[in-house]
Length: 258
Image 1 (tube, rainbow, N blue to C red):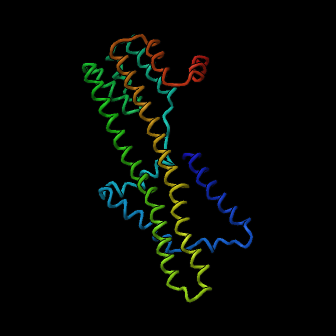
Image 2 (cartoon, helix red, strand yellow):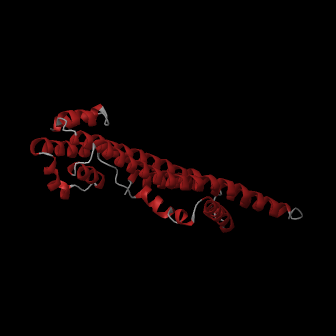
Image 3 (cartoon, rainbow, N blue to C red):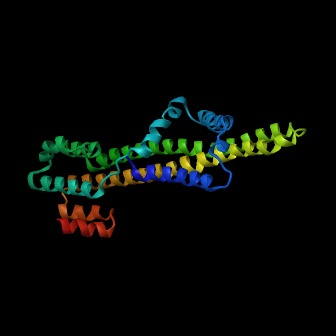
């Protein structure tokens, strides 16, 4: 589970709850309005349903699940694994890597090693692997765009709900006692839209962008490593090339561990 996402989400709502508690005369009941919830959430979902195919729309829960349950790639371990494969290939030949495929859990590395063992030309290996990277990036963009649109339409429907509330309130001008509560209910819809967008969906979208960046960087490391192994480069040279993808401090820690 992504602790930062969970803690950030809980903290955002906790600060709002504390602000309500310490405000004189405030109560949580005053901030609960079911018609407003229906307008904001239902309206945003309806608009997003128009924007995307049905299959993409129903994929939203899986996209949001990635925000909370994700395993970020360990770049150092990835480099160490590729260097180890390079050492095996240099010592025993490329065909010796076939016996190590069962021990590799990363399917992208398995794809590259299998093509290298089969004698595929380097340019073909690179083309296939970069096509895979492009496909992954495209899927990630679609998921992020889905959450972006939900975050965009939430405040819009919050404003629509506020306008609806104001229209209903103005229809009761003959009752001055109803104006104050009516105005409060009208503004709650805008509040719901702002919370949905800024406390949940837009931060989640940025987390998806960060996860996408890290995964694509890890895949780029694999491409560079596989091409180096296939061309018979010295494992130390491959290691130096791949280390450029991690901060200098981590490189120092890696050398000390070695």
